Image (cartoon, rainbow over all chains, first blue to last red; front, side, top):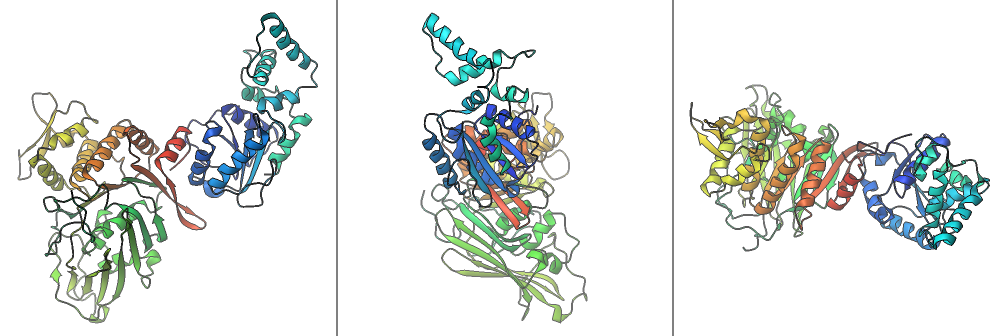
Length: 208
Length: 399
């Protein structure tokens, strides 16, 4: 499992994928490794609010001449359309091309693509994508039952249901030491990469 | 304080000013002459452009700030950028075209060849053009042309001690007489032409009489001159500012309580530091970094309204003190209304600058430029302070 960069990191590969935060970085890095794509470098923002700043820094970053393709993977949160437009506005303001739709890439140099999690359509986030990938698991129904039980017993409900479900899922994994982060779980094989839920994202990365 | 005059900043000086041989890195020492300083940063360059100069076909450093840090790999043109600015701020001193080579340790090459190396790819048919725009929007430029001299004028002879080599007698025929024409166009469109001439008589200079620029310094690791530091420190001490230097040096060694100049042997005074021991300690025994910081601080504090160019900023300085060094330099530059250009190879130096300027309130005085060679040629990446802070926070490579 790679570590987050300890020394200053340049753009070292022709394709760069930007995730929102460290968890996304681990997740996307694990997926790229799983797909055995060597020409993609994964990077992350310091929160999506820093996207514009990150793109400005990217335009100046050491190794920028290598960049052939840029992809931004962001959460839809409550509103897929608003998230997509926000990313496009940041791209445009930084002088990058803007894709016509989520999940597509431009034909520019560098090419630019935006993938809005979980599936370029619904509201949600990375956790929702991961949850979608395990819906066929026999234990998946246990998650809903657990939170329903808690609600019935105490009246408490998690403020972030998807994150809570992912944590509960990970807590139930039979791993020594446990695994507490979605991204690290990706490296430990907790997410079924071959599930259809991941296919749009896999295709998006393969097109870079 | 009044506004600066429209021309090269400074009071008109009817005499052309000369450089004494010992002052290799000093352009014009105008302390005491420049008693009026313009608006805050009014004379600072907003952009500088190098055309057909050294390794630059056409390169602009835009959006310049008070402190401009230039990074890049070896042979990217960092020192050349400083040299370009240096020539531009002393436009009637054609000797500098050779002295910048001396500061690089090149003194064995004849002037003619040295001059040719000022031109991109030694293509002397295309003039060198150095252009600048100030934050007020005024523009000036310096053109260098290498031509056959039509006639040899009566000129001031090269002074003793200057580093340029005089060609051996007989090594050039009359037909080989060549001149470097240094043509400065000031912000009001006035032209001022200086010459350097190589003939059978040797090397001669003719300087244009023109308004004086503010003081400028070029500090290089190999070109430091102890007597200059003594002189500059003395000027600061004259007006009771030596403690500003002491305070800066404390970033390197907290024991330094005071500095003295003593003549203990020979004629030249030496710096001694009071560090709480029974004897004062020669400053030169306290490490290169202390000496270098003293040079830098003296230059910045004296460069009232002028320019300080520092090659290899981190040279001799441990990374752990760089933040304090930058703070001292940054605050001094602001106080002196001076503009600083510095080069570095060091990530720690850049990170320290970012941290230091982030702690100086209400300023965005830092800008980072990275010169880089690509397939398309030489390019420049520019980081303003906000982007640099983010890049540092994200551990992104910026060198």
